Amino acid sequence: MQSEKDITKKTKKDFNPKDAVLVFSSFTFICIAIMFILNVYDILTLQNILSFDKPIKMILNIIVASFALLLFGIALSLYIPSKYIEDTNNSYQQFSLLSIFSFMFLGALFEELLFRGIIQTLLFVFIENQWIAIIITTLCFLGFHTHYFKKPVMLINISVPSLTFGWIYFETNNILVPFIVHFLMNIGITLLFKYNVLSIKK
Image 1 (tube, rainbow, N blue to C red):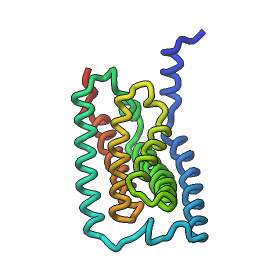
Image 2: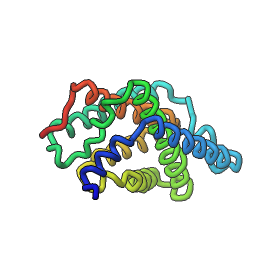
Image 3: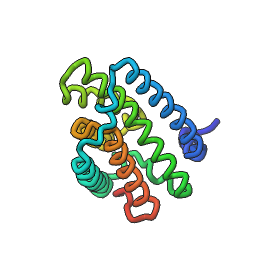
């Protein structure tokens, strides 16, 4: 009979970014279809989800938020002991840059379309309060990452970025802004682990 450690190791070995890319691609198309339908029925408008009225604010938000969240992720890795951290990044080291890039790109795109583009926007339409919409969306975002529940400190690691994504989305009315920040944060931290610039505190 296989031990729990053997099963865990097998699950990690069985993980393949190419499979995840296929899954994320499928769900991304579903999200785009839902947003298109909501747009057709005037529940969402293109101006509210893909506005380019504030290009300077968009660029500043991308730069400042990406840098701040990257520093936040580095600080967690350096100062919180490994027993409290879900060591996901180390599992990506064996994969190629293209596989990691594709996985991170589509993962961030799917999550932003679903959580900010659909859930947060719809909540705001019905509740008409930005921060309530952001907070409820963040709770949904936490619920989506069930693998972090065993190490609750990791919930901080995703709740702070989620609140940031929600805020900059409302600030710019452009879903591309939180998506780019989300992607840059994820790929930045992952590459730091891949090339051993960063390691989990023992």
